[in-house]
Each structure stands twice: as C-alpha cells, then as structure tokens.
Length: 155
Length: 100
Image (cartoon, rainbow over all chains, first blue to last red; front, top):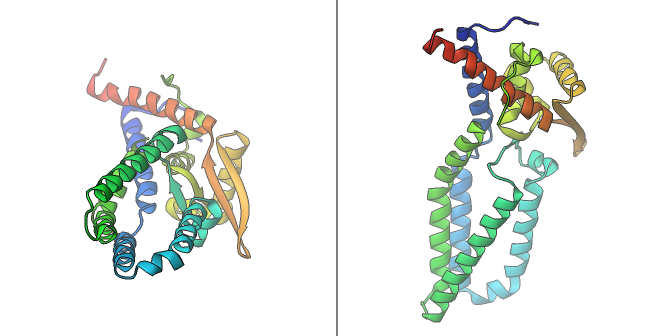
C-alpha cells in the first residue's frame, strides 16, 4: 500500500479516477431508451382503450393499477431489481422526505389539472391524458433519466 | 463541512476504485463491481472483506431464485472517509495551480 502523501499530479489523477468511476456507475444504471418508448406506448394505448372501450376500465382498470404498483415496488427492492436485470441502484439526491414531498406535489398538481379538465368538460379526456402522458414518458423520460444520473454521479 | 484528511486505506487505487464506484450508488451487485474494476472474484472478495472490516462497505447476501447474489453498499463511515479523502486530494491538487 502506498503510504506517502501523493504529489499534486497524483492527486489530480486520483480525483479524475474517482469522477470516472462515479460516472461509470451512473451510466451503468441507465435504462434503455426503448424502455421509455415502451412505457409511453403502453400509457397512450391504455388511454385510447379507456376512451374507446369504457367497460375495459371497469373490468381491468383496478387489476392493471395493482399489477403496476407491485412491479414498481418489486423493482425498487434489491431482489426485484435483480429480476429486472438491474445490477445497481443509483444514489438519488435528497432524502426520502424530499422525494415524498415531490411525489405528493406531483399528485396534487395532476389531480388539479384533471379536475379542471373534467369541469371544463373536455371531450375524450382519458384519450388526451393517455397520449399526453405517453409522449411525456417516451420523449422526456430519457432526458430526465440522464439529468438524474448526472446528479447522482456528482454526489 | 468535510475535514480534509487522507485515508491510508483509500491510497490504494483498487480500493479507491471500489469505493468510488459505490459512492454513486445506493447498492451494487458484487458482479457489477468485479466487472467494472476488472478483478477476479477472489481478489475482489479479499478487498471487500477488508473494507467491510473497517466499516466502509456493507455486504448483504441473498438469493434471486436459486442463484446466490451479493450486494455491496458504501456505509455512512465509508462516504465520510471518501469525502474527507477527496477534500484532501483537492487541496493537494490545487498546489499545482498555486505553487507555494
């Protein structure tokens, strides 16, 4: 083991290596763009289906929500992540409190927008929500992920 | 505020690479760290064992189906040591830009 104090050049090299390793972890945690496109298409298809076949929501709506919820919970555990082929989970900035706060804020804003659209009697609401949400996931998802991973590499 | 301090354990480039890889993660599989650092199972196992003994890395074992899995994560003590080490390295590195 090297026990002497590193020279300034060695210290710079070590700092560079640390940065490279952090970026390596962050890049390895990235999901494929196709994952986001698939989720976006599924969201849009769900919205279209509910609009065109309203009885589908009554029959399968709850089951789909529960399955998705279980998948999200499973994917966030070590065991479930391994099943999905994920070898690491990137560190996220902020604590659980901040994340929970942002989640609650997002839910409130979404509910407010849907309530407003409902009151204004927007036609084919579920169709537009599905297509809008699907496009958001497919187009903004990879950008959001890259941004989050860059932040985790800087931690 | 992190007190700059070189950690003798992290002066070893391989240990530093392991700790730095884990720093950007909440946890990582043993296999990911092995492949990323380019070590054999036994060599990484020894390094991780040493880091575990010093309280820098936590090791969890489990099964996914019938396959055994080992997950590693950097402990709070490990993060603090890395933070202090980086702060000291930055201090030393700036001596190139501002010679005494």
